[in-house]
Amino acid sequence: MSEAQFQWLALLMAIGSGLLSIAGGFMGWDWFLDHPRARPVVRLLGREGARVFYILLGGVLIALSAALLLE
Image 1 (cartoon, one colour):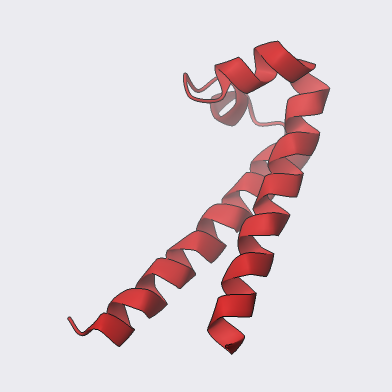
Image 2: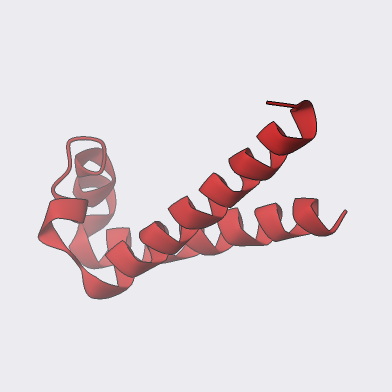
């Protein structure tokens, strides 16, 4: 795999992760918010705050990936 292909793959995976983060935050999926890596965020911000956090995080991931793709 060439370096250019790897960069495209990494950016597409970041966009996919951003979409998943937005969907998980918007839908409030239990399997998403009860994940061991999400629990500290839920404890810190509460469930609704964590949902907003993950929606914003997904937006940032997508925006940064899109900016890098268009570069």
